Length: 92
Figure 1 (cartoon, helix red, strand yellow):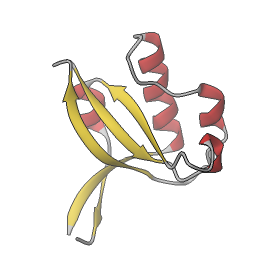
Figure 2 (figure 1 turned 45 degrees about the vertical axis):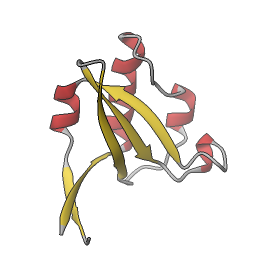
Figure 3 (figure 1 turned 135 degrees about the vertical axis):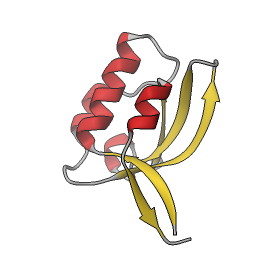
């Protein structure tokens, strides 16, 4: 088993609010986030340190809220935010 970090709708909205307020390079349309379903885990599929002060994350949303071809979105978050994300185990 391996572990992956994930967002809930609420934590994704909160992290995006920080990204917008701090003018990070990757943030999301706030009205689109409101359209995401409740009770779903949105896994972080790819991470990389960016600008030595944040993590750039690829998040799987698989929702028509971002358009039919927009199953993955990008968000820049502080290292502390990334480290605080919950994890779940998934089969390898």
